[in-house]
Length: 245
Image (cartoon, rainbow, N blue to C red; front, side):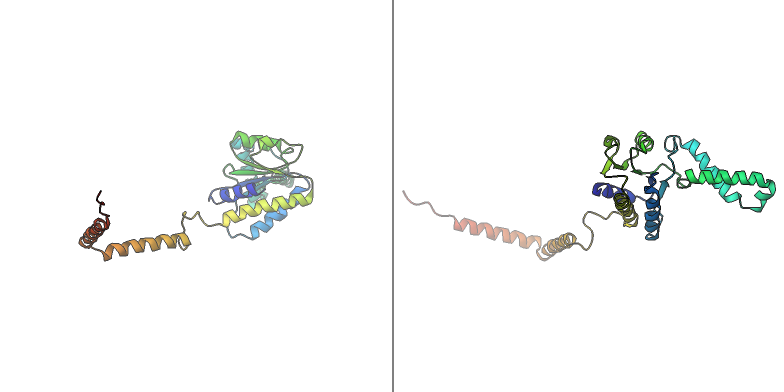
């Protein structure tokens, strides 16, 4: 779980990175919604977190052209169904059918309708149930962080979190940890240089540089040559004389 959190923390630092949370289990849905609200309230910028909590629609990652038509249709119905011009064009029965269509699409595509590009990573709750989402992500080269129970195949998951995916306490702990790691990554500052200013290492290098410059400035080239000659004379004088045989 710590390795998964570190990976998502570093990935979230990238400005355009996004995370897709896939969890359709009955126990997981309210936890995902609750934790996501808390995380969004604690940050001032967009987190780029998208969710699938009802059912994974085949082709969400591998057939984006067809799926994007449903996104566009949902946005069109949402913006137009309450307008006066729209109501004047159609009967009450037709408007009722449009509303049913909107509600259905909202259930399946509401959490990903604003996702303009493929996500940077997937966080999958119960990789056995969401095996189609895992396979599509692997096919598209998207890394997968997943909760893997004893009935799932860990070889398909890049970052495995072995845990009980049916226990509410286990799910709440892991989901909170993962989403908090993503939030901290989004709120983190850009990567600093290897030796940041103000650190002890940087102060030591500055002091060394100052000493070198002062030494260079205080000793002239002529004085240095005189000192070298004096040192050589002392060494010659200290050499022991050979004893007579």
